[in-house]
Every structure is written in structure tokens, then in C-alpha cells.
Image 1 (cartoon, rainbow, N blue to C red):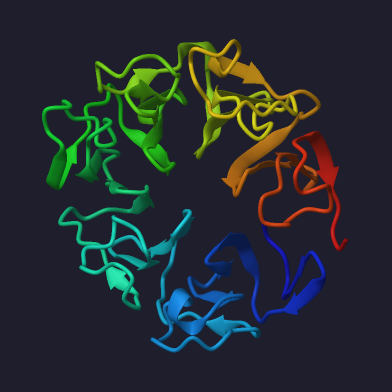
Image 2 (image 1 turned 135 degrees about the vertical axis):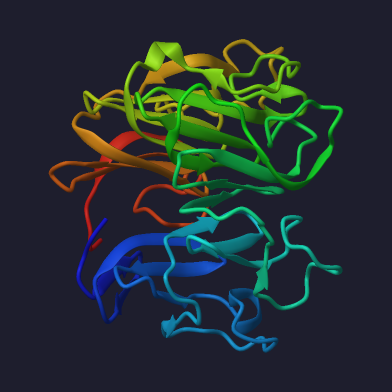
Length: 321
């Protein structure tokens, strides 16, 4: 997403300086600028990483870090990454401190020089200029693509892939890499002792999603989604919050329940010519080449103008609302 200095969210309109390239929400809102700085607002100073104060930040403040390439928002933390540094705040196991509820931000160490990084709930992966992928952190469910006997990967360790990677994406407990030939490999789990396709977690090596063919973008959260070169969007994983585009929510996502998992990618109906896909708080959205945004799922944080508690099928989202 690229826009000028104005961002609309439900019930409010925020004016920002600079060209905004992406917009994120987790602990408050983050708007990333094209100069590598970011605006941050919508929660307390402590939870946003500005200080230990509990004063509400109602007007955007310019973040203290520069050269930011990516923003990572999870349930209880927010992280920003440049090519060589990852800073996190909030309450999450990825933050190396005790107790983790102290004010941030805190740097998450990573000893390999990278050009891009992605952050999960308890793991951090980086992409080098040569296309090699390294991960460190919790590996109890294969987050770092190492054998399950290695519960914690203490130093960045290379993930074995057949070709150099060009893009990474991470969810809470899984990571996917798009390789030079546009194939997609994923590793990690979508739940206790389950791989990201819902099958038993035994082999933690990255899996090729051969049925997808060539892919231009991917995103992981509760489900994993990919955009194929023909602009269609495909998702797989737990059938929660309608995130598979069918407005179905099965709680809890138990494999013993019929249809609780899509074990192979299913096409999201109604979306064509997509170029990006992203997740956040029970909702998945796709950006099309004509700048139209389509979303589906269950709106958990009142981000979209539809009934909050009801999973929705894909529809175009118009702003301002």
C-alpha cells in the first residue's frame, strides 16, 4: 500500500507527514514511511515502546528507529526490523528479558548479516543477500526447521532449501520462503504437534507446496495464504474465523472434527489480479493491481465496517468509511 499523508481507520482520520507504504496494527497502529521511519499511535506510551509511562498516545509520534524495512505485529508484541537490527516491545517470549512486561523496546540479537527479517511468536528468521535463510529461537514445533530434539536454537542456523530464497514471511509458529523459481516452502506448525497443513508434526524440514506452482507473495498467521502469478489467492490451515473465505468458524480447530482443516490450498473466491496478501486479528486482506482491497474473516479488533462477531466472505473494502 502506498498513500499520501492521510490514513482512515473506522471512526477516525489521521493526517501523517510523508508517503505511507504500509499500515499495521497490533499494540496500536504503525504506519511505515518510504524513508524508513514510522508513525506510531493508539495505545499507551509504555505499550508502544516510547517510555514507561501509561499516558495514551492519541496523536501519531515518529518512531525512534530508522531504515525500517518491515513491521511485525503479533498478539502481545510489535517488532520492527531494518536489514541488520530487530527491535521489539510488548509481552512476548521473543524478547530476551525477564520479566518480559517491562517497557521496551529491546533488541532481539541475530549474529548473521541479513537484508530482510521476519518475526514469529518465539522465533526470528533472516534472509541474506545470497538468498540463504537462517532462524533462531524456539523450535519446539519446528519453527526453525531443525529436528524436534533441538527445542531451542540459540544461534542463527541455516534452513536447508533447494534454491536461494527471495522473500520470507512468518506467522506465530511457522515460516514460509518464496524461492528464486517462485516455489513456496513452509515449515513450523499451526497447532500442538501439527504442521502448517494440519498433518502430524514429525519431519520438520521445509515442505514444498507443489500444487501452488509459481507464487509472488505469501503471508502466515492462523492460516497461510499465497498469491499465485495469475493473481488468484489460495489459503490453507485451520478453518477459523472464516479465514478460508467460506465464512465458517470451527472452534477449537480440532483435526478430529470434519472439515476443521484445509490440508491443501483452497482458492479464495471472487479475488483476481491480486499482488499482495496479509493477515491481522482474524482478518485476511488482498491488494489487487487496481489498488482495490478485498478482505474476509472475522473482525476481532473493529478494523472493518461489518458485524464484528460474524465471519464474512471476501468483499471489497472501501475507505474512508
